[in-house]
Amino acid sequence: MRKLIAGMALAISASFANGALLDVPVPANAYITLNGFEWAWGASCTSKGAGDCDTPAFGYQLTQGWRVAVASDMGLAPTALNFLFPGANVPFNGSDPVSGARFDFLNAAYTNAASAGACATAYFTNADGNNSCDWFNGGGQNVNTVGWFNQNGEANFFAEMLFIRTTNVTAIPLPASFVPLLSGLGLLGYIARRRTQRTA
Image 1 (tube, rainbow, N blue to C red):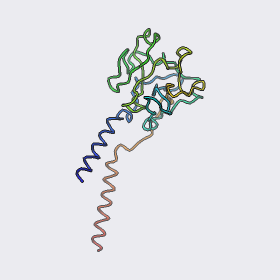
Image 2 (tube, helix red, strand yellow; image 1 turned 30 degrees about the vertical axis):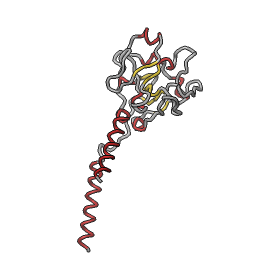
Image 3 (cartoon, rainbow, N blue to C red; image 1 turned 60 degrees about the horizontal axis):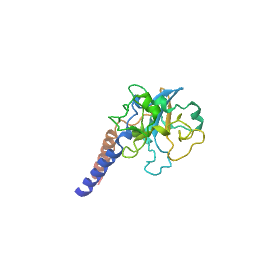
Image 4 (cartoon, rainbow, N blue to C red; image 1 turned 90 degrees about the vertical axis):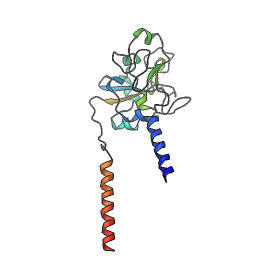
């Protein structure tokens, strides 16, 4: 029994280490607001997953109002340059000190802008996976790049994925803790057990 409990504790702690950043709200400096929506550059691969890509995993972010941007949203989509602003989570030519997110495949547009940028991959994909925004594939670049997933019919596995939500969204409430629930159930079980012992 001790070995089983130790093994379960190890497995649980390892799962938190692998995806710990998936289950927290996206910081305000890791996304932008444009055209009445909040946009997060959340994955450098599509949900198809391929190569060294991780399939996006954003169950927690759904409770925060985020969803994959679809073709009908893309007329309002930002360009990659819109994700550059002072104070964004990823410093120029660096990585986010909190999530480790970074920009890869840089080009002259990025270098000339010399600004911090918003990259939220750690909040929408496994933090141990491809935790970067591939700048060269971001929307609004030259015609040789892939661009945003779902924009102009783009469906390549390495298309960059945008996640979107309406501004001023209220998160879907989740139980603050399961401890009170489990305590209550345990108390009910204890009472039921005592009653059956008294009647016996």
